Image 1: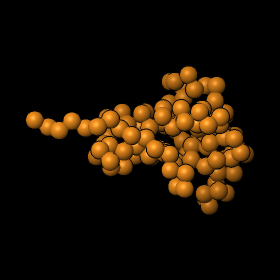
Image 2: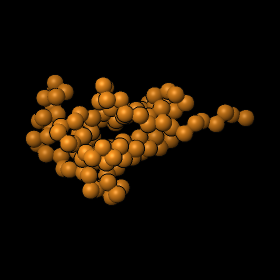
Image 3: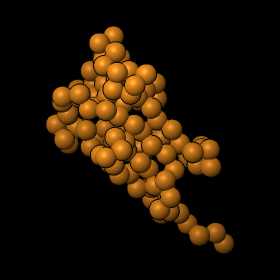
Length: 113
C-alpha cells in the first residue's frame, strides 16, 4: 500500500516574486511575477518533470489568481500558461488586463533582458 499524498499547498513568496506549489513539503513548481502598480505581471510558470501530468500548474495558477483578486490587484498574463488558463477560466476575466508592448518593455527592463 502506498502512502497517500497530502493536498498540494500554494504559497506566495514575496521576496522571490513568485507563488510556489508544494507537494508533501517539496517545491513542485512555481509561477513568477513582478508587480507594476496595482497589476501583477505573470511571466513564467513551471512544474518540475517529477510532478508532471498531475494538474499542478492549473492548481497553482488558479490559487495565485485567487490571491491576486483577494489583494485587490489585477493580472497581466505575459506567461503563455497563465494566458491560456485565463482563456479557459472566464471567472477571472474581470481582473485580467491585456499584454501591451509597454508592459513587455517594462518587464524586460525589470528582468534585465
